[in-house]
Length: 481
Image (cartoon, rainbow, N blue to C red; front, side):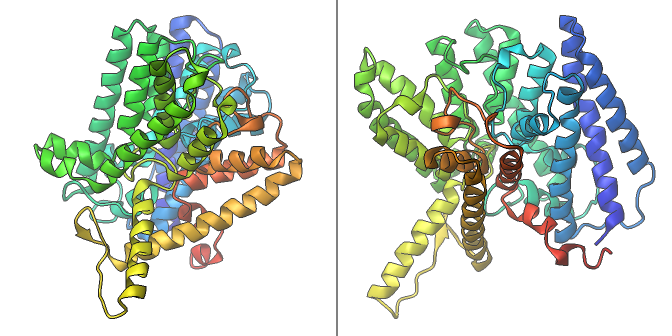
């Protein structure tokens, strides 16, 4: 274990966070808010510690898989602890565990909140809250790889694999740093497109920035207590479209960028993802048609809620906890499905669902024709054994953590629907659940113990489980100490 390079890496994480703090600081200056001083204090703390950690570059800068996974897991923890300081120091969120919950929910793009009155926060705090979504959506590590020459060579791929969502991560171009740059350029470009669309629709600039950050990161923090309900139907429709766009694998956009539209349109995962959205919207729209004055309005809200749940964004236009059971059941299933691999969305990912379905079909075929040999393919490519093994391992770890979390949070004695959807919402980085954690509720009633369970689930869900589990494995640290 190369402890020195981990220390150096975490130092750069703090330096990057110090730079990110300048945006809410500028916001405080623009609106004349005194809370901005706490961003300045935190900026100074992060910058000072970051400078001390990166003053000397380690002689050995080699990253292997173990260091990569540990660096990523620790980076997200460090990022969250220091990111919570402005909320806590300003006393706008007086309890540190609540401030930490809110920031972890932000960086992991979950969108679950302990706040009972969002509008009571100062604007600089609201912007930082939403900006954490944008930072966490593509990943701060991917950003660092794009702008900083760290390990070099092929070692950076270990870091990128540990942070990027999905069963496998490949390079768009031969160099990882160039891949990271392309991903962030695409991310920035689509975010800018949404900002322009919302501004043209008449939305105020502050709301536009906060909601665009939340949509791009598929997070879900809003600036109003009713989330998105107060905005116009046009603005809600724009957000719906961009939520769905950010849930698509960014490789698809790269293929369009290099003028290979046929390859982009043939993406199996993207077609399945859009098909699930269409089918779910039609079913829910028809199921809730009696709740609205027109069929068009029913499908408008159905499309929004399907988009916000499958992409794990977490915005809401209304209280879908009041919808019929069929509609709520579909939404809960979409929580587990999630968006595409290589997107900013959470959940299991459509690609893993496709792999599981293909495995079931293969087993059925083997039962009927024991001598036959069938090769599993995804996107026209042969699925390697390690990808299938990784997907199976993920499902097993997912089930174990989900079950353990459900048992632990049940100690708070809330009803099963609340507990089940609370774990599902945090582990899949969704945001709202049902019952006491529905779209019109919050997470403030849970005990501190349960909140820490949810914090772990949010981090584990965002980092595809294994980087977080490795932190608790004795074998990870054995050689290091």
